[in-house]
Image (tube, rainbow, N blue to C red; front, side, top):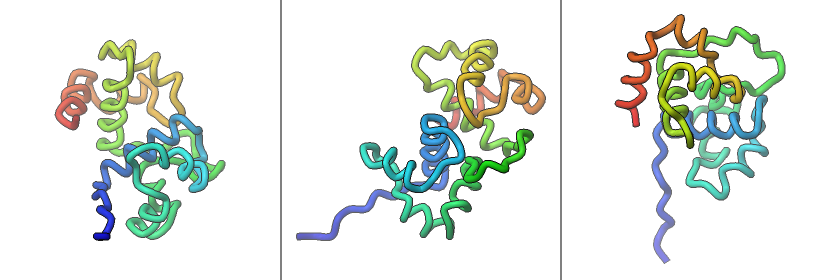
Length: 135
């Protein structure tokens, strides 16, 4: 029997999976909750994340996901985070791609910038174009 093929996960893929798990499971995201979430999906295991980033908290920090209750509400998203979040919104079922629709979607998500926060950072057309190029 040959060695099992281990899928390669890019840092971006890992960040997207952690963000998706956090959106579904809520924050703070624990390694054990994420482990249950990733098993039926083609996502990296917590052990792989810890090997890659050095610790569970470092992996979550990379993805902009809270690992404890003491996170500040004015959490800063990097430009790449914002673009990745908009890409996630654009891929969501029923997404219309409009700014108003994003703002409504963002209210239902945990840990994504509000429409107002997003608009302070980028014009909607620009962030949407960058998010489309990402997918």
